[in-house]
Length: 233
Image (cartoon, rainbow, N blue to C red; front, top):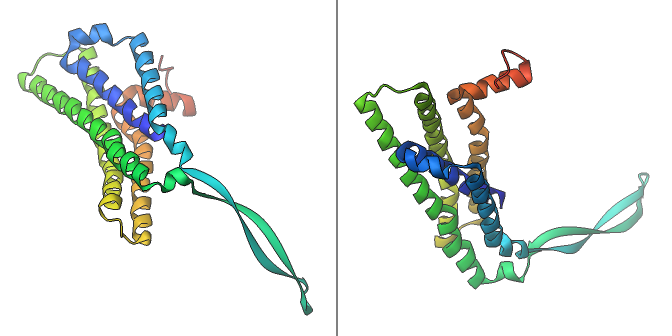
């Protein structure tokens, strides 16, 4: 749920910068606090509706294990058998339903998780890159505010491209599972771990991207943790 929310929040931020750079007059009307809160709430509700069936794919089941315990080290025959009850996660009936897995986990998951957000991100960022190149080509005399907006937009483009690269590995794993059902389980776990590593790396690298591109961000970090410089506000 949180992963999908972060995906569509990235789309919202890209859309915000797209309107600011490519349609500044429209941006003045729609880029409001109220609109931002409404869109955040809409993303949260829609993602929860989509994720809802996922909560019923798993269940807990109890298993019993037996182990021998020696009571006296000097007497190997003094052994008792202990029976322990453990709990583990297993698939519920829904999680084992092949029709459900085919429709929900592939035919719905791939478009909702990858195709739609990646298409929107590509369109928004492609348009912004084109607009920034036109601005640079015309060599307009830009004000301080416009220069700051352009720096933020460039930072966002780099963040989004990193995001798309890291998440595309996950898409590859999903396609691999669907197209190669006989894939060795060890290989599948290896690919899945690799995809999860890239997702974690994506969240980790954002801090450094903000630090490289955002002067205000650097000032805030230095002030909060080292008490260096003036208060950013």
